[in-house]
Amino acid sequence: MQVINTIAQLQDILVSERAKGMSIGLVPTMGALHEGHASLVRKSVSENDITVVSIFLNPTQFNDPKDLERYPRTLESDCAILEECGAQIAFAPSVGEIYPEPDTRRFSYPPTDSVMEGARRPGHFNGVCQIVSKLFMITDPDRAYFGEKDYQQIAVIRRMVEDLKFRVDIIPCPVIREADGLAMSSRNTLLAPDEKAIAPNIYRILKESKSLGLTVSETREWVVCNINEIPGLEVEYYSIVDGDTLADIEDWSDSASVVGCITVYCGKTPIRLIDHIRYK
Ligand code: AMP
Image (cartoon, rainbow, N blue to C red; front, side, top):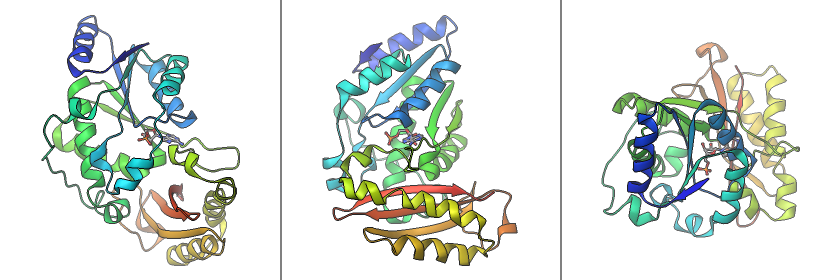
């Protein structure tokens, strides 16, 4: 596997591979890789001739500087994981390489980017669109792989691809979980052992909420109450939405695709955990 740090070097390689008829898969990441990322990389490797995994802690998508500061950085072990998954290229540019000038572009795709995480993390999805659009322009991939772990992110990126006419297939990949049900996340390494022990209750309660036979608003309330009853967990929001537009629904029959998206504060720091459940 080659580790590349500059755009020029990456483009030289990709232009020549494409001329040979090779297909290109892109997996954008912020590093601190785990089995969730590895599942995306393996899928890309199985579907493309060349898999490029970007490792870039994108500052423009962090609305909280403390979150950026404490984000884990593990480039060496990341490269070992990518090598083992069979990726051909790790692209690990510096911030100056990606943003030689401040990125002043503005993206707006409501309601996908204005509800839930978009409402609580101002500028977050704008930053996501800035980096993902740059990565698409740099690599011109045939396919790009994103985890459903960040359910809302995929909906926003689909809108951006439609808007800017990128010729790329967006491939959503299922959430990879720990054996206890906790969605794998780079931020999980920041959880103390007692916090890690209570965090799996989030998914357990989401799963239980599928079989209660309650209305949408009763289900929402039931989930929030049950999670908040657990000391150390506090729900920031729980939204039950149309799976494509992410607009709130009032009744189960309002949409053919219904998803519940949650953000929970865990522990004293606290660490913000996100998860979701598909109702239909
Ligand atoms: P991140 O490094 O957190 O930006 O994540 C990079 C990509 O990996 C995103 O598309 C995430 O949705 C995806 N990802 C992160 N955690 C998981 C997981 N547990 N299961 C599946 N995909 C994941």
